[in-house]
Length: 448
Image (tube, rainbow, N blue to C red; front, side, top):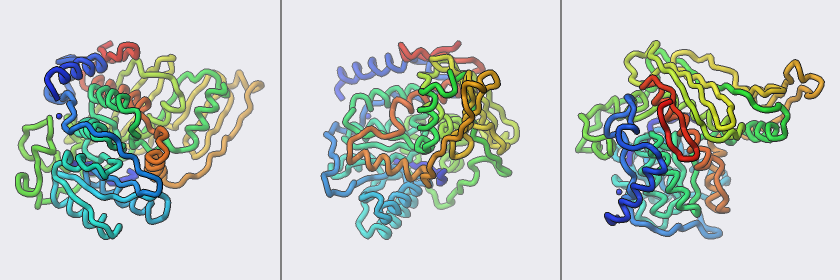
């Protein structure tokens, strides 16, 4: 329905409605004002009621192409479109993109033109994504809408019987993530993937195995970062088309969704990552990439305590912060330190510190170096890891292959849920000035 502008590799019956709301509220563990910090608008969370009729899944039959659709045809949606067509043309997948949805006519028509010309088939377009989801001939949907639309699009696509790939972060807020989690778990027959492609890098699988084998002792704490620099302000490189006319060729209210009403603002439309009501900025757009595979490798359980700081050091016009620092503690006591910046490109070395040895992950490989006290027990070693090429293409292919095999996809709901706990609690911590706790037993978040 709406679109994600990132081009880099980079709503039942009243009774059932009340039951659903009660279940999801209990799962999320936060209600009313307690949900919303200073960084959240008062209407920043909507209860996710499926807005499409339930339908059975329709996996592709043997010898049948995967027929997929894309919701959101901006930069990231367009990137997925071109990449999947290229993968198909290279014989790496038998997939056809047959339908597209967006609220912006120019973006929709541009994507249709590319899809039609490159595939040599007719491609249907929809202003209302719910009309697209009614189609029984579509097996899978890729969601490349802005963060505030992810949750509704995911729930509706799952309800409509589609396998789902969603861009990162999985949702904008934790409450939405818990509702998406419930929807995915309620539909175990669906294939669900979140677009955090670094999970495909072999070094994180090797790191997870080595940690489980005790080769660095108990992991004590880890560090990683995502840092880059800008002279004009991060995400300002997304252009503003003077031909965009709300009510004429762009449905602004539909794009806003539950965050409406607002006056038309082309800067918000084109550069929404800069605004706190629409994005968590560095945390959800950048740090999720490095956080996700590290959480996978460590396997330390759920985040249980998060404290973070954010600042406007250089880019004072951007509403979201241009410098962030996070400390995330997990169930087993492990602590992860993360740094993110759009004002300086020098980040932290990605590494895991163990009681007996340290693991370095900055390169393609894993390197283990013993602590001084354990040099007689643990040898220094380099664990070689293969070059898989484009990790984002590998994640796309993983999803498309799982659609055929019905095996779980790599970047799954459990991992994405843990990541969203860290993302949302860090965001609240920055805007409210408190540490936040999360109880995995009750799935409740609270101020520390």
